[in-house]
Image 1: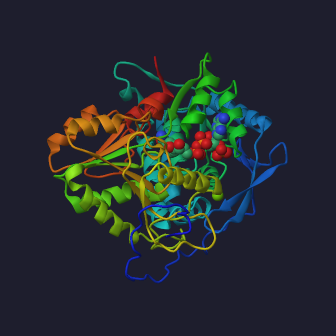
Image 2: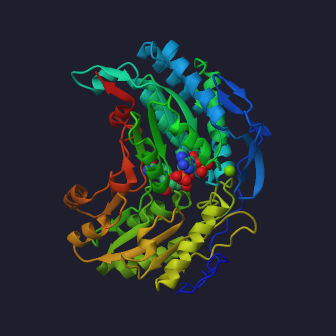
Image 3: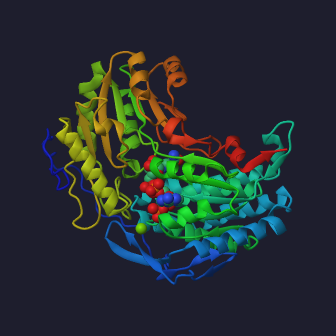
Length: 494
Ligand code: NAP
Ligand code: MG
């Protein structure tokens, strides 16, 4: 039993010694991080008004990587003022064709600096290098490429109407996909002719600051993009600033609701991308081994720090035992450890607070009587790590079936009929995503019409593409990011 499972429950025996992989660390010699990062306002890096800085930590070693400026209300005001000036004097007047070239240039420069961005993403956030290298960074570039193409075609997004930009967008993002979330926010806003003030999460500010360097290198007019770092109060100052016309927020449902309350009665436009508790539904006629890979990818990818993670497994009763047996074996082979090792499947939990939250919810699962199954992976002595875990004997009322754990922890429930699967899948306050595994395409369509989820994957999971819209139902938020639908929150039809 790993040191994180200070709990009781049925555990598998440690596996026989399997393959051992020699360490394969990513070389970091092309990465030069500064000891200190300033705010990016009006095209320049400048010190915060308060003179205060906060540390950003590498969660796999618990060491400080750099210190980062803590923006207060005065800094946010300076950034919004710069964004307003850039909007009125330059960006809103520029033909879409010209704006598109800048957005395209950002995409190219992300590709050129891809290796460095991937390493810094893994250092600052704890995700395995193979994910930051193969998923986060290429997808971030793809978003800028995709929306660059829209910049001179916006009227086609609104048939029969003309498209007009909104003004200054205030955007706040979380720590689970720091660069990718910045791309999801910036690319459509810029393509549509808005200017931006972006606040990255406190624990993962570094790739957004490298993106600020990229924006400088691409010669964007000063003030078109401003990046202010800080914690919750910086985000609150940004969304509450009267000079902001549109707020886009990705993060927890709690903070999303707080922002919704703060904006009530104002003319600001709002989109929210919030939490999730996705059901991954496996029918008895599914290709079992592929489904097991999909389940593993759905919950252990990025340590389960994924809003659309398949954190509830709904499995048809007749195949419950075989799926559980295969899952137990499969999680023993997940390599947990150094995010910069190219072999690592499960990296570090993003912060100490998040690790504590995962432990607390896992303990609640055990105390509510669920059976825990946990990988015997040897966890590194330092850093924030949690072994891949799943629970059986879970019922819908258990906390682990209702609350977002945001860690590598899966709850297994069963169903007997498709109707019961739909009812259980929809029995949550969230509605961000779902997965369906079956041999019958008709069943995928039947289910996907009934599932109250923004994204439904069929015989796959966690697949993203810039052309495809993403967003929630119910308390998972509203508004879409990606695809043509992702333009609408940044446009007005006239
Ligand atoms: P969070 O605590 O809500 O933080 C998100 C961002 O909001 C951070 O930049 C945070 O700053 C800032 N913030 C905190 N309090 C604020 C306030 N009062 N006003 C304005 N901004 C404020 O969420 P998190 O823990 O970082 O992220 C995890 C959550 O994000 C999960 O619930 C996950 O499901 C959700 N998520 C959703 C999507 C989606 O597309 N639906 C995607 C990714 C993540 P600090 O970092 O300094 O606290
Ligand atoms: Mg960090």
